[in-house]
Amino acid sequence: MSAKLLLLEDDPAIARTVAYALERDGLTVTHSLLVHDARQQMQRARFDLLVLDVGLPDGSGLDLLRDVRNAAPTAALPVLMLSAHGEEIDRVLGLELGADDYLTKPFSPRELAARVKALLRRAGNGNGNGHPATPTATASALFLDDETGQRISLRGQALPLTRREYRLLSHLLRGAGRIHSRDALLAAAWGDDSESTDRTVDTHIKTLRAKLREVDPGREYISTHRGMGYCIDI
Image 1 (cartoon, rainbow, N blue to C red):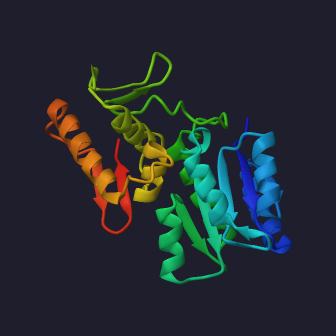
Image 2: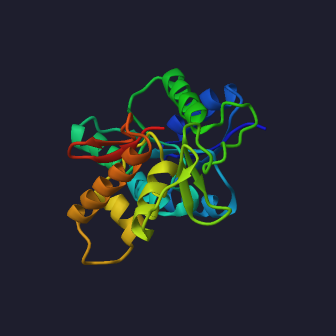
Image 3: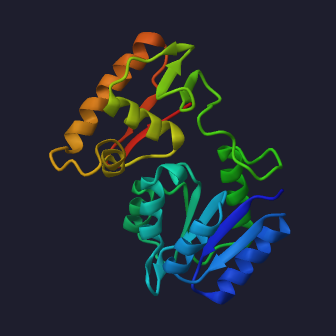
């Protein structure tokens, strides 16, 4: 079964070109012209990857990206952003919100298709069945086990995590390899707690690193990206 992609693009000509390039590679493409339509499509079906334009008549693909990253079922969904703007601030904002890749128009359809396939392979869709690998079982020594209770183990040893630490680490694991902004991590672990700040995230990341280091002192799992956020490498 081929991977299913949702394409959010308000220019029909660009959408046809992108869809043709992706479908030629055996992918299934669902096209939406508006952010509202894309949200409805995501309620009806599960997708393996999103391709989102930034500027839409009823909003921005960045709005949908923010929603996707803040919802547990889609937090790890690969997202490629498209934009007619080449300014650095647009790319930085998209990456801070959790985009996996970014293409500026005009672009080569072949390059877009190659990037989509690379994102699908990284997410576990390179096995040919179009379904992502189980997000709770990583390829490294870190293992997120949601089925037997909220537990994360490292090299077979359960980590002694507080509730906030568990939420932070599980959010990072579900989006492994992606840079998560402090705002996204705050939303994932603290929700609407108005007393929490960026410094709160930094403090908890520090304690998480210490606990990971106690079990595996030879490796740093969580990396800092100055001005952008944190990323976990597995």
